[in-house]
Image (cartoon, rainbow, N blue to C red; front, side, top):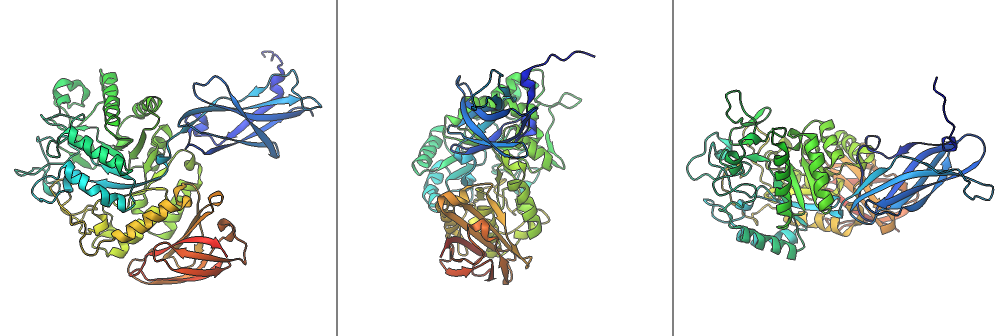
Length: 579
């Protein structure tokens, strides 16, 4: 048996530090101004007194700052420190024995391992997105809209309360195996193809589709967005048409069949004959990884703060971990959204290793019990430390069955849920028009603009633009709706009525949402409010004002009756004030 050399540091134990992501393998995520609250079990042998603290600093700084920890109970200690700048912070827990006068002894402090917090810009947590198909913003159904057409739409989009315009891929589209209308295998003459088939003789990922205009034209659009207070997000599709310049320049970057031909892409059960996938472990993989990083850095210079990554779950974890870290060390203001509608553990892993935001299963959650269960997982479990769920009622790829041929009330209800359950949500262009015709036997819109030219009448009768603007105005005015992990569910025995609240006491902002999940029928019931969650006592009177209808009510206590007619409103978006 090997002799153990005694060390006074061993007298103090620091263990069970939380929160941590994968035992500290990945950083916690916060935004500027947030407090990082750390707990640890700290104890020592014998009866000497001891103290504890958190040391923290912005990575790269030499000097540690110190935040005290306080004893809670049963050897549990807790302390907090504030992160002020975007970037990476590091921190550790320290403890030391004190003399009778609470002065440090000669014993060296015991230190925990050093852990990380990644501080992202506020728009990683708060965002109201409008997803735009640039070529569909014009007025001629036989050709693509231009960047000038997109510029014309900016005032309306800003007026609806959106702060981010998210663009599908804007690059030249390949001609080889080009997809036709409704995803037909072969395009007819004059059909534009799918923008996810990136690359032609006009250029690749650094170029702009010439049908939309030039790069200078795009820069004018980006400048107009900035002047309107709108951020830009770009869809990065790491796919290449057979016509992409990379195919001739770097054939080794692609997956090959046994006969040496380049392999078409698949995302089982789907096949994509118009694109090639990259081989991320090819013999020249470092050059490929660096090129993809450089593409993203290039577009940051042209106005994009946010990048939505298409199908990240089909690429290696190691690649994302390296690339996101590398870019954030250079440009910590860049934000990444993972478009990964896949298995839960895969989605969580992508969030842990670096993605700021994640798509969710919200689109398919319909019943009250499953919505509540899912959002407790997202917002109340350890996932809140690393995963920020982005909610879209629909996407260009997903038009869920509950909206097939559905009335405007269904579109309003799903948007209200998306806009209030999470602090980040988005709406796909055309949703405000309640476009509801599905492709037969598919969860996709008929005549999808992914494969054809399309125009929209943005003022078509039956639109819900006024409703959208009221919801977005409430999001902007109420700090409680700008926080992600402050969601609390209340109860109603009617399974069609869901009740939840968000509150930030320091901002005097309390929001109570009561939603009718049945878009076809009036529903009623007694809602039972957890009064403490609203900052109220059990018998208090309080005012509730509906931010959609403008109605005012005086309520008292936890039990109150509601009746919701979906033809008038999908629910109440109440602000709450004590009487």
